[in-house]
Image 1 (tube, rainbow over the protein chains, first blue to last red):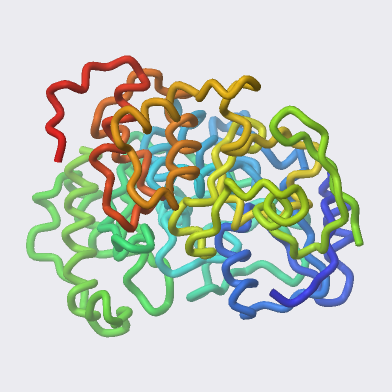
Image 2 (spheres, rainbow over the protein chains, first blue to last red):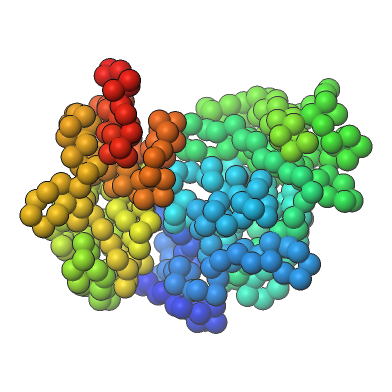
Length: 263
Length: 161
């Protein structure tokens, strides 16, 4: 690791201020960033830890019935505390990485990194969540802008993520057994006004909505409604773990499994 | 260099660290607590698992400065002052839950964390909870058996393989 200055502010304001310094970078739970630093793939001058900011931790419900999760809330806490209100989201959080990783990794860190194989982006996009930063509110549909790319500006941090709670939802992932990331994952969420389907792990553009599957599930919320629907392998990630065609196929299988589990 | 202070195994501990000093480096190099092992250094293997404020975490993937003010427990903190082993340590001994022993500190700390939350886990729950702990000797069977035995469950029907 290259050397850096370390700051651990206790308020959002202090963190935002610290992040204004040259080459400063925010540190969530560090379960991705610390390994990245060890490989010398990042070289911040200052690392601003967000783990001591109490106002960014915890889960509550707003007056619109949305589940509001602080950006520095760990996966383990989401798994425990969202179980009653939004079981599919709690289930997703309970299966990220391993127990020790879930005790450190945060929802804000995951969404800010936007790894193309991460689980949370699928939940945020399929739920139509709102990403609240220190500066503004960003709709999930506008937030994810490609592999490791988001609408976040330099120094902008995720304070909270607000999830509308669907009538029914489920997440199905085919796990990459070494990394525990999703080789492909599908999150299906049914709302009053239709079904949203988000696929992670497959596209070279990162998480995306599968609109054809959304239309089919909006008409008939069952795995059977997806029979015959296929994604093209074009533009899908191809690596030693699986070809683009294989990932496209898995996306269909995972979506059907999620629809069956949520229906 | 910044100063960091925490409580380790019930005793105050402090020292000067760099921003990039990992918690596991602070424990091993500053405090001489070499029971916590560094296996892969990539947060895969779990040999470095310690408890920070009651949560099992990988000490190779957390900075020492992030443990400021925290209560940290390492493998050295489990046994009684008179040397009496923690029930899970004793169970590892009784059921031959280790071969080379390198992964053992992390396995025990993870097992203790599991039993704190789930006092009588099933075999499947134990195997699931050990997802982030790797034993290169592949001695999982007796590790699982030891954790089940420490929780007071009958392990006589689990074949010794």
